[in-house]
Image 1: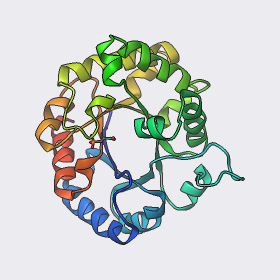
Image 2: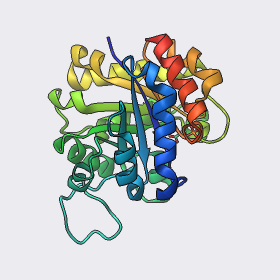
Image 3: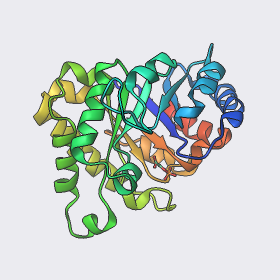
Image 4: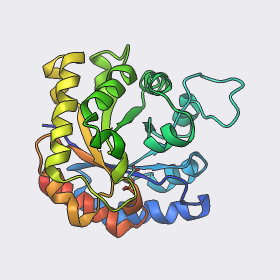
Length: 255
Ligand code: PGA
């Protein structure tokens, strides 16, 4: 049985001075569900020390929103996986569509970041998903299939213990438009079938696949009830502890 994983993606929204209050509020509001659901806050890198301190002694995990593939060096503005580990975080997001869209992220760089994260012992949530134009052109499987194959190149079945895939249709992110549970389940099933081709069916059954894109307390239960939807990557609704906890409570009920 795959344990549901609900991760907040704070994006560029919470200041270091605001971080402890949000992490503590999340920990308090979700304590009753923490045995059933893996709970994570992925924060701006500069918030990580405050988030790790506030999460100490709770079941809330902390992660970042990106990582570089080199251990150290002349890469202005980047953070290494070693730095993330050293700061006490355990998770990282790679390949978010905003990184792909605004910061030149490619399937190849997503692959490098993903492999570096796994090698460092981090749990990596690698994002895939199509744009509206790609969906309308019937290219969902082609696009998501390519993002998976290239993004997971040289990742081994053993590495999959540290791998989570986040399916985030770009047209549903921050737009209030959610994929229907059926639309999401169709792509999640395709992702699992692709993972089975890459790593074998047994391993594919163990990999958790999150849905992301306007998930909120009101729609989480029906999404999380689907066979291949094993959690959520949450943007806007992760910024308010009560909303985030509402999603986590739905995940606990679906477990
Ligand atoms: P959203 O963002 O929940 O605000 O749509 C999800 C994400 O981008 O991870």
